[in-house]
Amino acid sequence: MEYPSKLIENAVNQIAKLPGIGKKTALRLVLHLIKDKEENTLALAEALTTLRMQIKFCTTCHNISDHDICSICQSHRRDRALLCVVEDSKDVMAIENTAQYNGTYHVLGGVISPMNGVGPADLNIESLVQRLQGQIEIKEVILALSPTMEGDTTAFYINRRIKDLSLKISVIARGVPVGGDLEYADEITLGRSIIGRTLFG
Amino acid sequence: MEYPSKLIENAVNQIAKLPGIGKKTALRLVLHLIKDKEENTLALAEALTTLRMQIKFCTTCHNISDHDICSICQSHRRDRALLCVVEDSKDVMAIENTAQYNGTYHVLGGVISPMNGVGPADLNIESLVQRLQGQIEIKEVILALSPTMEGDTTAFYINRRIKDLSLKISVIARGVPVGGDLEYADEITLGRSIIGRTLFG
Image (cartoon, rainbow over all chains, first blue to last red; front, side):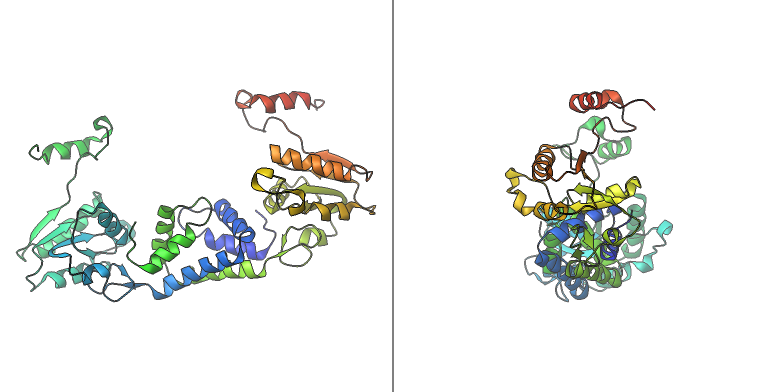
């Protein structure tokens, strides 16, 4: 594609670097921005710059935060006996959205994935172990990782590192999704849902 | 959705203002930017700002341009006897991409659409008429507007304004798309393709 302007070409290339956005979509967005009010583009650029320059990560749980300690870690209403270990901040938001959990979190920043060159040292696992060692507040660690090979590997690794700390270690339930039709569940999920069955009512 | 940070919330809201991007996609992009190198986000913000502040429109054809006169209008290799009237810059790019046209352009900046409150005065129609009046260079005006109600209305209006200027006025061919299966063409398109049939070979 020939662009009528270097400015357009540069903006398209920058936007097309974002995941899931190709050059055609990028061009559509750029042409929208040109037609739109100038202040909207400037506000967008400003929001991105401030985001990247000022964003912090909670020094306790590594979740995204506006301050050194995030609002969940600071809150006096959260149950400090429960610690939920998740892959990233998106998972914290998803669990918070369920309104079913009132404990605290620990964000790993990824999962162990030899294929992508991510080892335990690249994740916030050491800080999790340190957070759990020699404390009496946290009673249960909930491993809420994705039910994938990488998630399972990470859960096994964390379990090995913390199993001697006399804590209850649990994993989130695996089974058929609520609202999903049984016949569309794959055999592994269905099998796990039978093995992990609970008492009715 | 509760966001863990005001910065995230602001960036998500700004990105979600773009057409075709919802809050979920916006959040995915924001989390990507946070993980990505800082310089990438700053380069993106910079590209958007420069785009909006420095972009120009050709004073002759109203196409997007880096200069006061666009590269097509400046070029000595273009056939100045042909003038192609299009809705916006995207159409110029699409036609340029075909490599089948070597004339010049006139970008209207939209089509007449009473539903959206766009009248002839909101478009670059007056400047088209002025460009065609009292000149001898342009021999043919090609109306390359979308085959929609609005496009047709705009074409009729332009035709009425310039039909006395002793110019050849043409419209782009309508028919079955190349590579498309005949049975999937709608009846109006198929009907037009029969009415507008051309000699074989």
